[in-house]
Image (cartoon, rainbow, N blue to C red; front, side, top):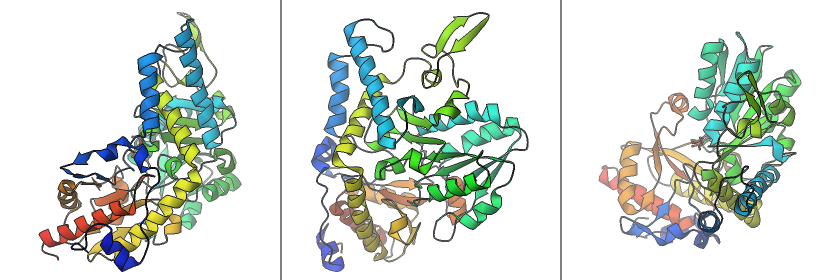
Length: 427
Ligand SMILES: Cc1ncc(COP(=O)(O)O)c(C=O)c1O
């Protein structure tokens, strides 16, 4: 395989045809090199590369149309305010929300979850109440609940995972109690790729007690497939712009209108008030109530361009491409001796993420050997320390795909893994 070079060996062994992304040339970064090698970017799960459409949309605002929004009576401010609010409506359509007023711009997914914990949680949870999370949550969907649970005196319960990295649903049903107030569940695990049956979880929770709220962390799912928050019946849904080919500094919190209406502000400042007096202040309706201060204006425009970009391609086309890649990559990596692959065996329950360890080499050794080969992967705990503990490892290597990933990227990864084997005396 190593001798065969990227692409060739894979086709000979697997008999599968090469998979090329028709959209790769939209991403200027792939014209650059890393350590003088062709860039093989397999860390989209951490943050995705940006297409020209996003870069140009942000550049256009900064070069020709920048001003603060929601304040100026002059043309460029009014135009940019309209463009900013258009993005809100676009995002609402993108995830199937009923109204643009259900879309709150945040800095990222993390801030969206903290907002729910501190605003909704502080208002509606009391001592003895229970929050159910899963063993595969990102720290962003654990720590905000711990920050709330400590002072309020509520308890966090955890849905365990099965041996093949899926949620143990019978165990989940046993965790439900009349004290359960909120369930926080990741839609697609960033560390395993598992696609969780959030619809089933929500239906089960509703059947048990319709008052239970469910927050879905869509940081990895909004990128890989079409989302419909109303069909899913999520109370809250968060995602982050930089994983969806958009910029950093912008994320989205969706909340059902009636729930947002019942929530107090998260932060105070400009743009979220109706009337300020030293004797007391009144607040705007959602979403403005939750967007204190000058927002990430240019980043929101970038997010809008990213949404347009993926919608034009079609989320279904992206999902099909990533599924084929996943099937190809899974077969290829399984053929490498000494690999342990984590997450569901069946690729039907998995997004474009491969999480693995290698016999005889720590994940950080693997990452360091791959780097000079031009191969960028993530190594470590992936902000999922409790999951790593459940898997019995301290770290894994993670290769994650984007819509621009080709099978040649996988071949380069596999070639790099054979290099690791030979360097660590396994090959
Ligand atoms: C599943 C999941 N949730 C939450 C986050 C946090 O995203 P952000 O750092 O953009 O808030 C990530 C990022 O890796 C993630 O993968």
